[in-house]
Image (cartoon, rainbow, N blue to C red; front, side, top):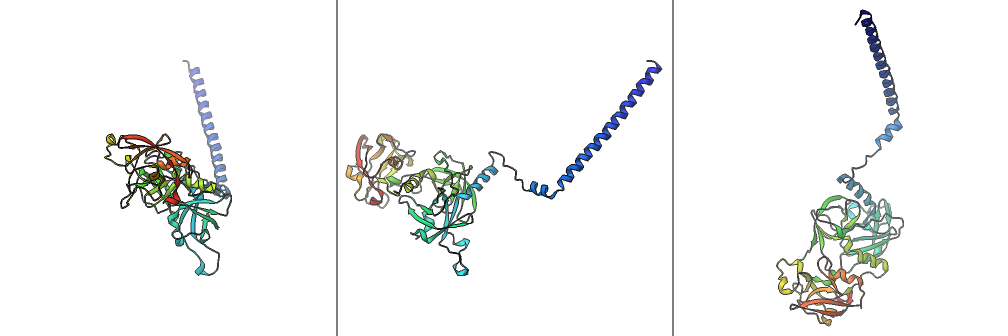
Length: 369
């Protein structure tokens, strides 16, 4: 390389360095101006206030997302109090501690489902007041179920936020259950058992339904929601829960104007699947319901029992109703839901190892028990 070429290369290199430096300076100036402009915009109080009110969305599938759904579901929870009228005299005021318990709005026109035990010794709707959000409502109707400790209370209202029913029949052990207690507290628990038989003895055939057992204690009558904010059920006592699918018959019968009119067999039964050492080989089946008296009772049948009149005997095992098999998954009570009082139903039974059918004219539950 000649001396002249070296000099030209040096000049070019120097020019490149100068250009690079100038570009860096220009970029720095532009960036600084942009930052100054951004910081100046943030100094606007309205924008800062707006940003401070933005609530980040919970990550899908997380516990935080479940809590957000359950928080929204609280709009459907109703709080039951003694009858109240606004007044200036402190002696006529009611307080948080006066609450009877919680209920849940199941229709937007004012039907509320609740545990009857929170209404001890109360038989009239006008003895109650209902608080939903910050609004008071006056009940106009109170209906008790005769099979479960459940009631329906109606208030004069419209456009309420009604709870969505969960598919509780598909629930599984370990699933989250969020309970709103009578005090308004939220308790997070989970389902410990979906086939819980509290007494582990015979019961009326018409109400033979298993309950759920929660992992944690909640107050009687607490309202339970799943992780999507759908109504799972209502607690009976402590950890015991009525799943919502077991209560739909009563809810629907209330809407139809014929609440608590249930067809009945008039016998006490116990599930074969409940006994851990049942000799299925001798009985001829491992599923079904054996007619058996309750402890302390003199008979397995009630007075004027349709079952006894039709020829049932104690220790008969009911295995089907009109050809549909019954078991812990599909109880006699469930099978009877499609019948009315006075209907005839054919029960398949096993007696002393032999299978036979018995026809029964179903009676009325309220008149038999």
